[in-house]
Length: 532
Image (cartoon, rainbow, N blue to C red):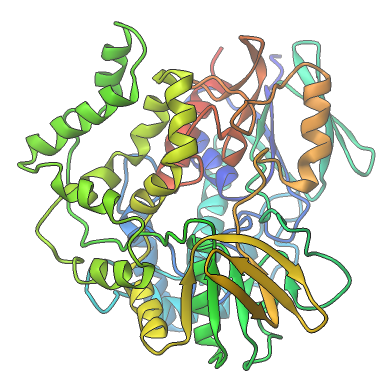
């Protein structure tokens, strides 16, 4: 009798769901899958845990499908959720841990299978197809997308089991891994030992980096804003709140304070003061030039420099009857007054130009282009252009921008650039910017994760892999991976049994957390881990 291949998935968040979905759609002999997830956020991960309904996904629902080749999958789930809520569908009782009697995800982790939680039902009724005031697209609550992930996980596991797969979910943290006899041995914090033929690291993203060393026993500092429904609930509504960062996490904090009817001043502080751009009305666009095949053809003649990437983008724009002026204008306006830039971009939600929209369509292709670029160009891009690209390629929904603009117009919200330092004072905090000092009662940390991209809880596991020469650190952060398969790479040698998916691959890859990218990479990993 042929032994089943053992696949270990370390981490049970959105990346694991995308991988299970990809595996469930493949043919081939059955295998055994064990998912290790110690937190209470099985299938949801940190980004999509149950949280305030005002926190929305940043992509239109049609771009959030986790089923490859089926962009309408999430929209159909949303429609079914609304129908179930209208019909008053209930939910079968399961244990609080959401795991079935044999280690499978239970129906509590499959909201779509049984009507979802009360919160999910309310969101489905009031916000599942929520369109912003500009009718640009539906941007559901992020907690509702977490319900969708739970549902997909339940359905994927059911399909796998129907084909003879063994699927287990263990609520344990893996703290050590090492190669062993053509596979790997995993050790959990409880001392359990597990053997696997293939190991996929789906560790998620870490918490914001405490750049100024503000965490400590004294109150007033929020080191990680998620879940915002909990961490921000105790802030005095009259407090002056300083939010460190001006990216999407900082935007979530400002939205939540607004939803909580906060009355005091809110300041978003960062070095550059660049907010995410405002997403325009989506358009359908099939890439003609900016494609993986085209870039791989170019790479056969040598490295693909940044100048060459820009040329191909210009060709893509020209094929759609567009010039580069729109993108050039937006790049030149990054240092525009943030509030003015926000209002200007809100006025362009229905603009006829397609430049920004086409740029955003190229996002999934970035994982193919990035490894083909020379190291010096990648380093230059990260050093000088990362914030610009991230702002334009990962914009916020128009309704979110409208709320921020209203706070700004009312004099409550300030977006401040030139942040140098933040320190505790006798009565709160003091932030030093290039334009002066800002005193605050509360500081919320919404900065980027640490450069190494390793979540704190996963540090022992990653260090064990490095020590065992099964993983190596990329100079730009994260671990080195092979682009085609996401396998770990050490000294140019591909590690046969270890893979990584998500933020841990930053450096080797460029865009690592967007759902379309995760879905694409999960498909590739699923082919490799089930192959010969």
